[in-house]
Picture (cartoon, rainbow over the protein chains, first blue to last red):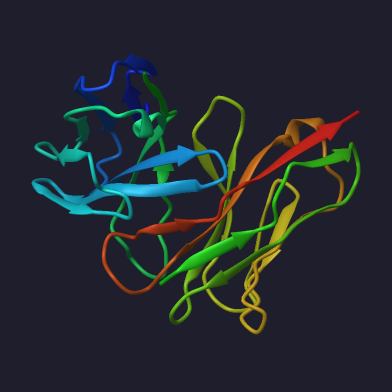
Amino acid sequence: NAGVTQTPKFRVLKTGQSMTLLCAQDMNHEYMYWYRQDPGMGLRLIHYSVGEGTTAKGEVPDGYNVSRLKKQNFLLGLESAAPSQTSVYFCASSPPREGLYNEQFFGPGTRLTVL
Amino acid sequence: GNSVTQMEGPVTLSEEAFLTINCTYTATGYPSLFWYVQYPGEGLQLLLKATKADDKGSNKGFEATYRKETTSFHLEKGSVQVSDSAVYFCALMGLTGGGNKLTFGTGTQLKVEL
């Protein structure tokens, strides 16, 4: 049971290049999330998904696209990378709410640098 | 909207010292509250949680009590260890809207020295 995994761990891009970050979870969770973490700003939600085939915008969605074609995978795409997208990206998953809370499980992160 | 405010770090303590990291929140209704911990080079892990007023979450010697009257969820530990060095995030999950979305504070870095 690997939990939440992210690929790649590190990446350096030039401005204008594109890339896709892959998140996979083996816990059969319905909900998945993409966050970015920047110094002094905590984690901010980019996009999220409440089930296969569905996605929704979070707090900072501009410049990113996502897809959830399979329940276990959640892809984050950058079509034209900008230096402002230099960050550490975290994926998380959780089961649907059954009560007052549900824990989110986080992947190890992807460190992206855009030059 | 929802928001979480944490005390700024870094916080540097000697081993066996008492730890308090302050956290206050703004939210509609009665959210669930969490503390997550991030060890160097890793993702976030849930440390403890509380779902209603006066609940006390506890784990690994850490405690936090959900105080509705002061909208606070301060993290405490009686005797810290070097292995507690990490970044600590306070977070809330609102009861409105879908998707179990979390709102995080900015994080507080803790460094424990011998």
